[in-house]
Image (cartoon, rainbow, N blue to C red; front, side):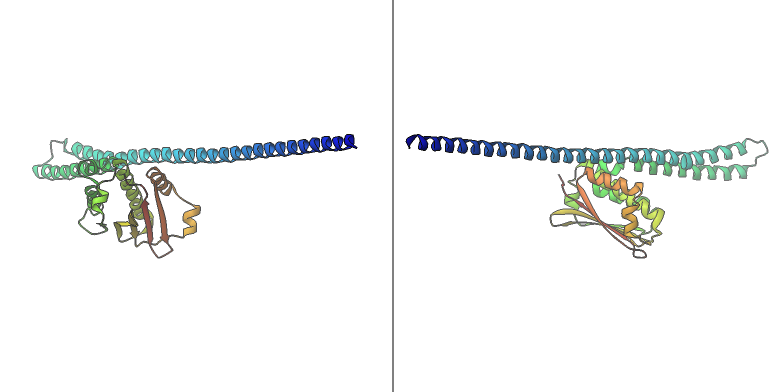
Length: 267
């Protein structure tokens, strides 16, 4: 009888030990499985971030190449063309029969061409690096941008800054990126929108610096914007990513264009 009880206890101990062992093994396998799944998810996130960084870097490089091409074209078309015209006028004077009145007229034309060349060089230089930003700050850079666009003294571009104190404290790289974004938006409006007026308003909302850009042009279909983003829009997005900014777009055919740019980290 005692032997039977002893055998039963022994079998029970073996079964309990086996059950505990299986339970421990199950927990270990489950832990390993979860760890592998977690590592796999982390790897996927890492790969996604790397892919995004590569895409962003590609957009930045493409933006730089596009900018270089545009500057080269501006130098060739604007400065080079004006210099060629100036040389042609000088060649006309290389004639002993040229009268005094013709010479005076030619000198006036030279002065006009030289003034045009100077203005073109200034515009190209401003696009490369707005001098007012480094010397006088963000507000002055906005005023300089307005002066260039409203070259004839009109009011095609109007800028209102309700957050001067905050905007003047922006880091240089952030301020430069915002100027570049506004330049790109203005360029898109001039090329495609057929607008008669552009408005830029800067203000604080919910503790965040916000820029509201609008034009009264022909507007766009938002689906076309989402599906057929051009290089200009990619340049804008890449610059926003660099300064931790987000944006929303409101537009429709015949309803103009509106973009809110929100800077998430000021300093």
